[in-house]
Length: 65
Image 1 (cartoon, rainbow, N blue to C red):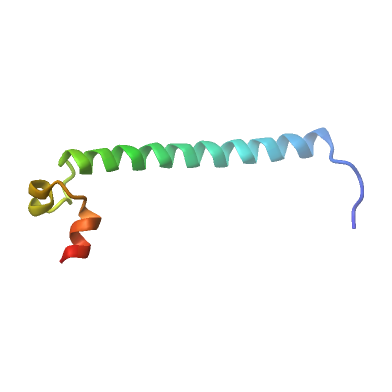
Image 2 (cartoon, helix red, strand yellow):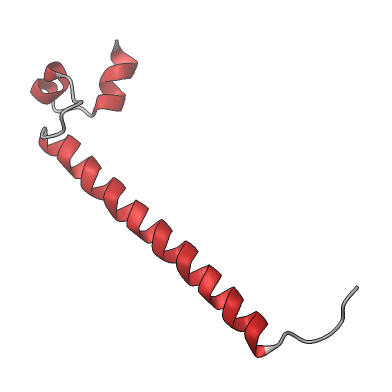
């Protein structure tokens, strides 16, 4: 097992990998929140008409069907 301490380059690579993963996750989270808001507002194309009328999400209406 390698017991050497991490170099500055090791730390930089780790930090950039962590930053990229965090930025990607954050972007996906905000896209999901925006899509969910569109569903709640009844503006999403894939929301069935009855869920717009009942005010339910597409997932809830799928479980009803």
